Amino acid sequence: MSSYHDTGVVLRTYKLGEADRIVVLLTAHHGKVRAVAKGVRRIKSRLGGRLEMFSHVDLLLHEGRSLHVVQQAESIDHFPALRDDLDRLTRGAAVVEVVEQLAQEGQPNLRLYQMLLGALRTLASRPSPLLVPAFYLKLLAAEGLRPELDVCVGCGGEGPFVAFDLDEGGVLCRSCRRGAAISPGALELLRRILGGDLVSALAEPASPASHDVEVLATRAMEHHLERRLRAVGLLDHH
Image 1 (cartoon, one colour):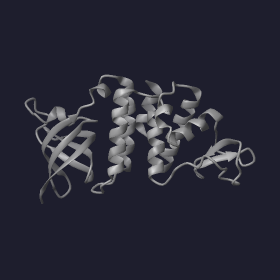
Image 2 (spheres, one colour):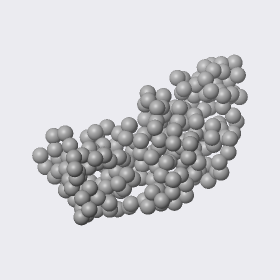
Image 3 (spheres, one colour):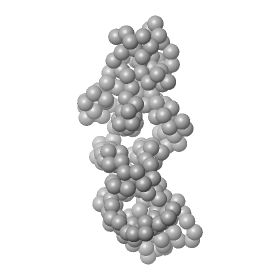
Image 4 (cartoon, one colour):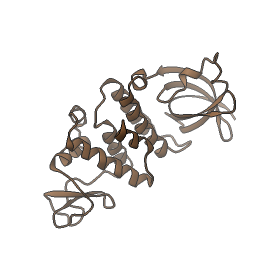
């Protein structure tokens, strides 16, 4: 058993015993890590405020058999804007919930780590109604599940496209239509998000098309994970 340095983002925390807390982290070089932060719930603890959800921290961890132990944690970015605004908080929770599901314990995934940090930084500086769905779509593409948006997944035709099928992972023409209807505006946004025009797509105001993209991206991610996402339900109700 040895100690190691890494940087990480806190995905989730929960209480352990009287004064300790278990922290679930996505680290840059060790994948998902579950660690005990001892004594952090005591008033005098220096670590407590540094190990909250979304916190980006520089860590010294001691490797344990099942749970690692946080020996030191220095704050890199606390993302206060995500905690002070309900909309940002809810969208941030929708981002980290999916990351926790996709990340594998002890399996480094630097791209996922960098995507998570990028999403949190963007959310803190300029929240967008498309940030969460764009993040989901980019993650699916990184997992090798980029939606097919340019040819019908039923017949190979070139459109026009009127529906999207989650099982087939792409758009459908009128002859093959099944699954959920898709509007021309939503299809254009999907193509911009996945085709290199992400920054301008994120600047778009909320619209029926952006709502359709949010619904489709959420369903696609839930289909991939084979479970419902808790935080997305909060987005619909706040």
